[in-house]
Amino acid sequence: QAINKKELANTVGVANEPATSFTAGNTVQVNGKSFGEAVQSNATKAAHNYNPTAAKASLKKAEKQLGKKNFTINLLADDTDIAKKSSEYIQSQLETNLKGVNVQVQNIPFKSRLARVSAGNFDVVLTGWTADFADPISFLQLMAKDNYQNYGKWSNTKFDNLLNKSSNTSNANERLNYLVQADQILLEDQGVTPLYYGNQAWLVRPSIKNVIYNGAGSP
Image (cartoon, rainbow, N blue to C red; front, top):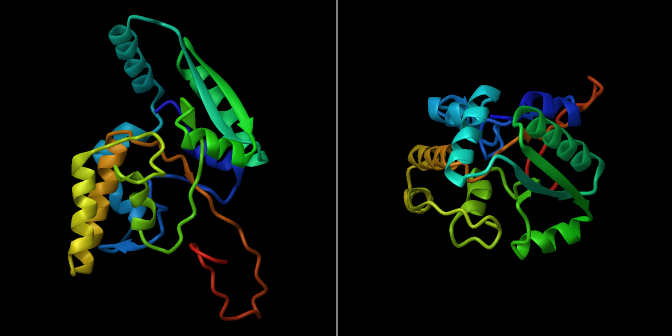
C-alpha cells in the first residue's frame, strides 16, 4: 500500500508492469483472462494497491500493538543496477509515506545475498523469480510450507491444501482455479509483496517471421 508499483516498474524499465499476482501475469489464461487478471479481487486490491492513507492507518495499528513509534527495517538486495534502483525507490516510498519508518538498504553480490536469505539473516529481501516452465505452479510452489526457498517461512494451511488439490485433479480448468485461489490467499495474507513483472521490449524487422518468445525457461 505504501509503494507505487506502477511508478517503480517504470523506474527500472519502461516495459515493466505493476504486479497484480505473485505468478507472472501472462503465464497462462484462466477463463479468458490472464492469470494476473484472474487473481485480482477486492481483497487482493485492498491489500496491495497503492494507498498511502491505508498504509498510514496500518502503521498506526502496528504502533499501538507494539508500543513504539519508530521502526528500522533492513532491506537486503543484490548489487545490480536494477536492484539498486528498486531498493532506493522502495526506501524512498516507505520513508516518505510512513513517518517513523527508517529503511536501511544493503546492496550486496548475489551469492552473498543468497547465503544471507538461506540462513534467514534478513528483515526484508528484494528478489525475483523466472519460471522454469510456463505454469503458475513454478511460482507458487516456492511458497509451500516445506519448500526450502520459502525463506521467510510463511505458512498457510489453506494455501498448501490448494496446491495439493491442484496436483491431484485431472481437470485442467479446475487445477488453474485452485492455483488462482492459492495466489489470492498469498496476497491477502501478505506472505510476499509482488512488485512488478519484468518485461523486455523487442524491435523486430517486419520481414522476420516465426520468431518464438519464451517467457519462461531457456531463451
